[in-house]
Structures are given as C-alpha cells and as structure tokens.
Image 1 (cartoon, rainbow, N blue to C red):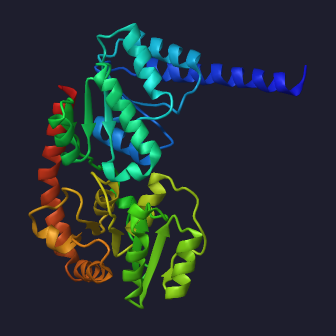
Image 2 (tube, rainbow, N blue to C red):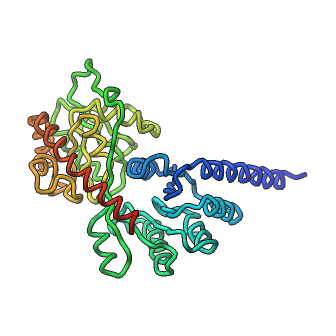
Length: 352
C-alpha cells in the first residue's frame, strides 16, 4: 500500500471519529428549543455565544469541508428535533450545513448572527461570508439575522431582510481570581486583541502610552512591528516577546493587572474586551463607534471621539487614572440597565 493511499485512509478514519464526536455532543444537549453553533477557532465569537445563550445551548463546530460529514451532522441535528438552529457566524461548511438542514426539514428555524460591519469589507472573506448569509435569507433558508450593530440591523431591515439587534454581555465568575498583583507598583496599560490590522489602531494607542515616561504597556499579540515601534519610542513593555494565544482565564488575569486598558479601535459593534476589562475591575477606553456609555458621564471619561488623536487618547488615560473609583461606580449602575437591553434583544431574536 503506497503512502498516498495510507494518508487518504487516515483522513477518512479521522473524519469518522470527528463526526462521531460531534454527533455525541449534539445528543448530549438537553434543551432542544434551540442550539447555537459556533466555530471554536474564533475565540471571541465562542465566548460571545456562550455568554448570551448559555453553554448548555452551544455547540462548537469547526469548519467542515466533507459533504458526507455535513449530511451526517445535519441528520443528527434534525433527529434531535431542535426548533431553532442558530449559527454564531459564517464559516466554511456552515452554508452547506444550513442548506442541508433546510432540505431535510424546512420547519426548523435557521438563523445567523453577524458580528461585523461593512467597514470590514476590506477583508474579502468578510464580504463573501455576509453575502452568503444574505443569499440564504433571500432563498428563505435563513429566517433572521442578528446583527451586533444597531445601524446594520436597521439597514438590512429597511432593505427588506428580517433583522434583529443583539448585544454582548460578560459575566465573570469568581472575580476574586482576577486581582492585581499587590507587588506590582508600576503604571500599567494594556492593549488586547491588538495586532497590526488597520482597524485595531494599535500605534496611536501605543503613542499615547509613550507620552507617559513611567508607563509600561502590555500588547497582546505583540508583533515584531509593535516591538520595533516600542523600542523606537522608548515604550517599556511588559512582554519581551510575542505571547502565544492565551486562554480567556489567562487573558483576564493579564487585564486585571493594569491601571487602564485601551481598546480605541476604528470600527466596532459590541466589543467584548471593554466589558471584560470592567468586569475584572479595570477601566477601559474605547472608540466612538459603539453604543457603550452613550449619553452618560462615562462617555466623557472613556469614549475617544477622534480615534486617531494621540492627544485625546492620552487625555482619556489620565481621566481614568484620576477618576478611577467614580468610573467603576458609574459602570456598575450602567451595567444594570445594559443587562436589561441585552436580554430584551436576545428574546426578540429568539422569537423572531
């Protein structure tokens, strides 16, 4: 038997094992009112799905390319008699899975969620995946799409698509685990989900950190370009090299060890990082592109209106340091009202 045949056989064995594991997970879901399918490789979307809908409703499903595997997964979902199948995003194989479920049983309500805006169409995949969802909706395969940006939900509703608004929420258990190391007396600023992509605005935020000579910056991920820029600007960093991907638990521990976290990006919908930061007790500055903190005192302290203004980012950093206790009290009150809105949006989506 040649090497090529052996490789094919090993792939077939692996796919059979993978399919069996997926079907077992499907069969272990007790509440059949709905299931939320997410791609476990998309950490943010996975956490978002679990936070909004609960782990008991969620199913991690990696991209699938094998038509037989898609058919077997679809049959298992149908046999479980879920009333709704919700895809947390679009990924390779999800379109075909939605089509197969619909072809077997068109009484199952198929829905999608979309976490981006049209600003991300600079990425070809973002445009293609959203267009795939809209084409499924035109064919009546997809009943509703939940958008995490109000203007996106409004736009598609006006264009004749059944659309809902969804909002992210963060609930941290055992908050005592996430406290600053008392031995760390440095002035720490954190930039998370940073990287070199345009929308992350990393270098204007790092420049603001450089305005304070006593400051240390933690950048995750710390790319070679970020390291070079920090060296040039004499920004002291908390990481000497690029960190590997962190678990959420580890990421929250890092966040909690800062004085202020920065998430002043150029485009957002309902970002998790600011909520995660506040939930571990650290104020977070954001850009002027979400509904967070609108028409409240927090907007004055936290929302950078001109995202590429180094001066304004620096000003907000200082406001956070000066008014930290007040900001945390204001956040606690804001969150109570925000939580109610999150629940309303979730129920409207499920009932759509």
